[in-house]
Image 1: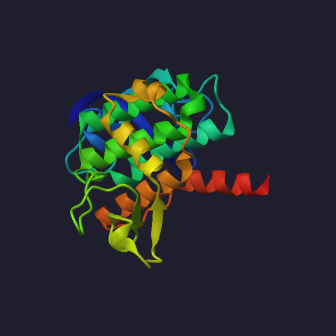
Image 2 (image 1 turned 60 degrees about the vertical axis):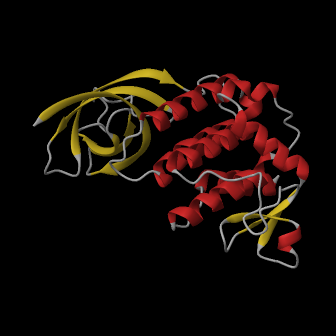
Image 3 (image 1 turned 90 degrees about the vertical axis):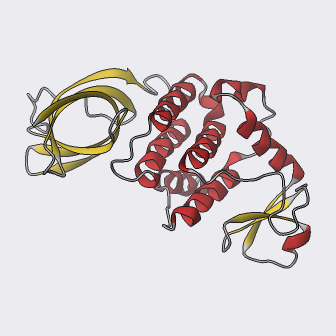
Length: 253
């Protein structure tokens, strides 16, 4: 049995028995793991107050090769996000980042660049809540590239001509220029301005450069497209519950 110490992002917590929780983390060195936090639901548990969403923590856990669920030994907070910015919209977009990490990354797939991308995106959304949707767009574009499904916003895959405006074809998982997309109903239109916005975000060095971009584009439609694109290419339909919650809440207002 090995004792492992690592930084981790808490993905979700599931009650287990009357006193414990199963915690899913994305760790810096070991990818996604599941641990049992024994007694964590008891009032005097040393884990209480540390198993909160939107936190970066340092954990120590006991690893055994033959177990799918490891045992949490110790946990300490490193950073708590949105402590002072807990508006509904900002919380939903930050939670969507965590949900993407949970749903799009396979178990035991360590990738320190994805870990750092997540931490940096959560830090930035904490400091710039007014850019919350655009930060999620940036996160998704970087995640897509890291996983290996980078989107070509420049040339049409059908005619190979430069793309000026385009349609995303849900049944093909591709962005196709407007001329090649005539009379296609299973698609979503992207104007020249929207494609310029996406190209600008793809080209920035890190999320701090978002403040330099023209952010007049509404990110909601783009987020829907990026989630659909990822779902198509991993061959598994993903719906982000956090964004569905925001959509339902907005519709009720």
